[in-house]
Length: 159
Image (tube, rainbow, N blue to C red; front, top):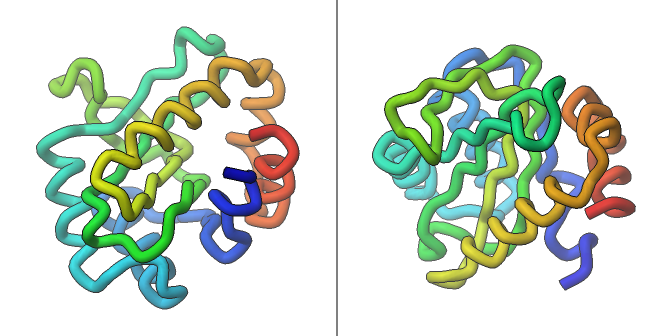
């Protein structure tokens, strides 16, 4: 699948919200307006994030990188397969995917949308591969961009 198919210019966001639920709600509002998700998506992604956290420490990728989160939910609530980048102006607390009791301050999300029941595993794998192979300096740039078009162009070239 080409990058232009898993990223959409109108599904890249900059959020100034300061709680996990508000970030997810604002992102959902835009995704719903653009037809990418169904009306029941929000409740399910929030519930899933509370039960199965998706925060990820980036310490292994570089000491100066902000933490990220990779929220997702079941495909039945999704209309289109996408990775939705969300840059956070303020750190937002997510619980750690590996150690769910641990809280992480997150500055960037890769929200996964997939219409297939097991499709998220493939998208998650693609995100993890991208993070692993991209030099720390380039990841720092990506995580500091505050313009959706800049994020989109970067991901089209590098992902």
